[in-house]
Image 1 (tube, rainbow, N blue to C red):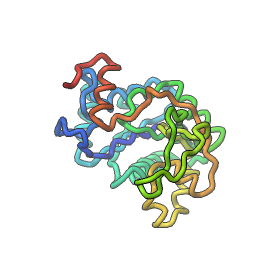
Image 2 (cartoon, rainbow, N blue to C red; image 1 turned 180 degrees about the vertical axis):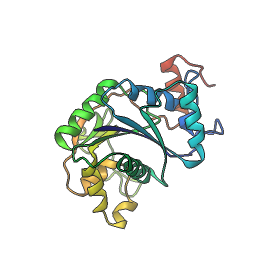
Image 3 (cartoon, helix red, strand yellow; image 1 turned 90 degrees about the vertical axis):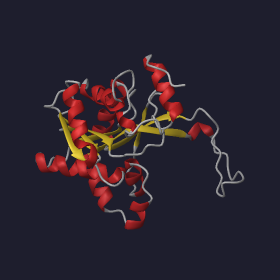
Length: 237
């Protein structure tokens, strides 16, 4: 079976423009997360799509699903965790509680605030996860990467031809991801930044899937302004 996992467990308000987590901010009169869910719903290969939301916002998320008339037979809302990894693990637990174990199950994890993901990217992730076991969506680095070990002076300038910017989805055979996570030490868990790092730290090869520069994460006010311009919505001053 193939499962979507939309990660919306955060309550960060870095943009300071509303009393809502950023995934619920309006983008052309529709919450960002609804745009993202709709992109997943057009991919008919998913058996279920799980949405990991902070426990304080579960009812709000369910109300949005009702309001925008989304396919409730495909969507499952679960409580997120204290961080990204915990939210993924909560979703995996919910999947395993509802469906028999299957070594070929695939999970496609995606940021709720990347609403411009394409069907092509999602399909390529599913195909790569089935064939290789783990994959990460990336784009070539458009700028020179500068490394500084002391945050003051340049330590290294790597060859840009081998540098990529990570995006999502990140997709896996579900049991491979879970088994890799279980083998992490507590110290390794503390430095996790995304699901692919779990596999890399445990020596699992992760296939690259090419993304799109438009598949960016809405994190700052500037990102939000760009997203509004892309959908022709109201621009912020």
